[in-house]
Amino acid sequence: MTDTAVPPPLASFIEKAAALLGPRGLTTDPELVAPWLTDWRGRFTGRACALASPANVEEVSALVRLCADHGVPIVPQGGNSGMSGGATPDDSGTALLLSLRRMNAIRDIDTESGRATCEAGVILQTLHEAAEAQDFRFPLTLGGKGSATVGGLISTNAGGSQVLRHGSMRALVLGLEAVLADGQVFSQLTPLKKDNRGFDLKQLLIGSEGTLGIVTAATLRLLPAVAERMVIWAGVHSLPAARALLLHCDAMEGEALEGFEVMPQASIDAVVDHLPTARPPLEGRHAWHVLIEVVADRTGVDTLRDRCEAMMAEAFEKELVEDAALSASEAQAEAFWLIRETVPPAERARGPAVQHDISVPVESMPAFVETTAPMLEAEFPGTEAIAFGHLGDGNVHYHVIAPGASDASTWNATQGKAISRRVHDLVTQWGGSISAEHGIGQLKRDELARLGDPVALSMLRAVKQALDPRGLLNPGKLV
Image (cartoon, rainbow, N blue to C red; front, side, top):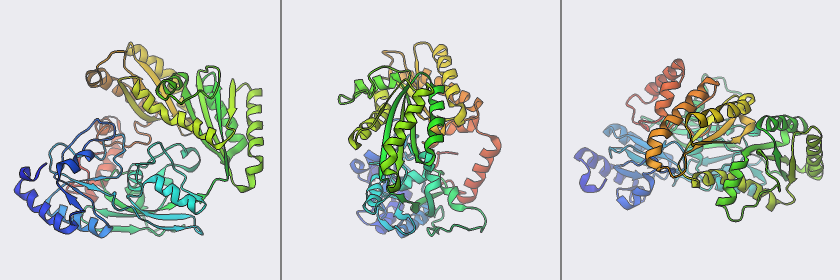
């Protein structure tokens, strides 16, 4: 929205917001605002009356109060790397896009207590590097670590590849600071191991996608740096065999088992076609490929390779694997992980597809994929159902690829929409979730309303009404 298009009430608001935040803190320049109006996947594009970039929590608080006074909706945004359109405004042009990217200070890293306090705009990779400089680590990582911010990760309760051992973002947040819909600052950054003063209020804000409050800072759990890791690539004949291998590895390594990813052969083929430098870790072809990461602290460095070799030797004896390769160096370990992280873009490069971020009970994941994939391919002839992801936590990225030569926009709006509805129906029948780690946003809002438990939905709406009665915080998202 250009200045000439701003209605008088919004013009008054923008004038006051500009005075509050200064030239670095507010812009209506269409060229500066435009890059932030479309979501990462390019599915949603909106309009905004301005882009605000406050520098501290005091400015956020004052700005939110100003928005409340003028009835201006707020769409909070971190790295704009979400998958569900949760940080994109609607097309009315009345909402304020609120960027937290200027609030990027790591306030403290406490090595004695193993925690970091940082602002919402801190990029995940920056946090990783700061922790590593102190011989610690923040145990959550994902493909978008170079753009995802702490605030966005908290607001969507992000997962990633280390949930198997460390849990999602919810398990790593020790304290929280946030600005509520009326501008009040909720401040509980100091963690307490025991605190029974009623509800754990920070948990309401984690995963709420900016609909209940705007996360401005957090205290996060840190762990001692990994002294050594071993990454293993294995080929197995079926997904149930991969599940059996997971149980075998967990029994032998337990807390040292940090990652367990599965990919079908079709995904490996797609990566090799998409990434010129990619080389299959194994010579032969296998129905499913498994990536396993085992880590060691300083006391276990000398025995890590021996333990992993023994673990895989026993897996061969039990006929759980057909072939396997253990990383010989850190560079090779990174190369193994690069293949896994390249699966999503490689799948997208194949052509139109509908992607689903779903979860089912961990023990049901192999049966779910083996049952539903052929079912969908039969119901929608010419499609190909591809599942890959985090076997250890039941999260499967479930892509259904369109028949060759399909027009993307037409297919997504017709058959693709019907496929997603069918996938969500099946996930619900299996006792799962239509959103495992990417949130609801606007992409899945209507599906949540259609399939969600009525009692749970009623409770969500009641909390929203209590904390944001005017519906100004991230309207049109989640509920």
